[in-house]
Amino acid sequence: MTLAAWLGAAGAIVLWASFATLVSRAPDVPPLLLTGLALCAGSLTCVHRLRDWRVPLRTLAFGVACLFVYNAGLVMAFRLAPIAEANLINYLWPLILVLLGTPVWRGADGVAKIAGALLGFGGCIVAILSGPGGVAFSPAYAAGYAMALLAAVVWAVYSLGARWLPPFSSWAVGGFCLGAGLLAIASHLVLEPPAALPLASLGWVLAIGLGPLGIAFVLWDYAMRHGNAAQIGVLGYGTPVLSMLGLALAGHVRDRDWSMVFLACTLIVAGVALASTGAVAWRRRLRQVS
Image (cartoon, rainbow, N blue to C red; front, side, top):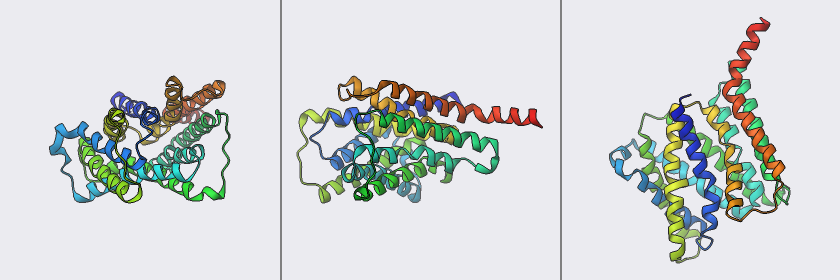
């Protein structure tokens, strides 16, 4: 995989890790309104390449629908279920991405990537469990769990979409963001009570749009086009750990077992390493045996 693809994926993950911290700075903005305005702002990162927004209708519909369902699904999941459990289900997306993007029947190569994804998911579980509260799934929150799982599947499918659709520029993501943002604002008008946007929160909404819900999508699209889907998927497990560190620096996380966080980081790094180089090692081992 090229260095540019690695850097693109890493840049997107760092920006997504800042999402929770930035959202915490705008607590008075209703979730769907915040999502809609931020996505519309995110489209501004691509407005200088407006000509590249011209894509076939099915490509536009795919991108808009995926970004809207993913973001709206997460919002609904966090409302209908405890955040810890919903977040854990949401972070199944890297594993789903690896499963969808890896031909399992290719023997050692597929085994190494899936094993790396499982290690990364284990690190994600450890990171979430490092807080003072545990994770306890309850049938009462089944609707929220279902929305989180839907979001995870949609994001994995969207991430691989560029490989399944006719070729289009990564800058076309700006059009996807604008369409999804308008849908989210419409959903706010229907599902949420009217709310005025506090002036103090406007800057934070703009930062969310330009970063996690803007240029991050462009970087991710580029990485998925030019990189290895399975390796990038495992790298995605770094998001919850980096997000936790960002919240800690912002003073929102205090009661954490940081030895568990270190263990989570170790598992994630091991998973990335196994998914990236494990296949080569497996092949060498098989050659030696044969």
